[in-house]
Length: 169
Image (cartoon, rainbow, N blue to C red; front, side, top):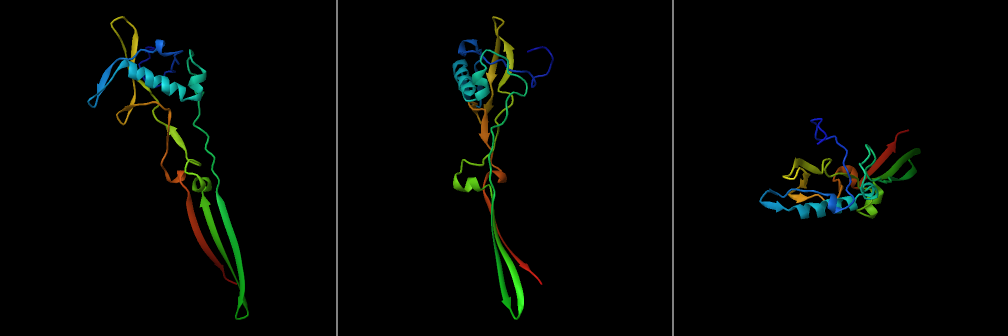
């Protein structure tokens, strides 16, 4: 709405409260989303984001938010084994590597998150009174109410590898 013809790079104004929000009712996939439903979803979205909830009544600063921190720990258990057979010394090693060990202990630990949608307000238009109206973005046919969602990749779960090593003399 700033006249630069680009629609995905504008900084968002964070409304002070729902009285500053203006949404247009729309239907998608046979479901109608009222202006009040969208305003409530946007209010919930703001409250679920630490940066947005602390900067109401301001424009969001570029690059002011970061993905939530992820803490992971990996564990390796190693046991060296020695022995003599036929007068020769034999050496071996048994090793257990656990990647993302914290996730083994608690399924909420070591799991990364990603942004649900980088453009939460869409289809900016002007109503009959000349006031800007928006639509709240949808994901899987529902209004977005949280900024992040849990990823489901191999790095987000624990992985174990058991290995054996024999050392030739």
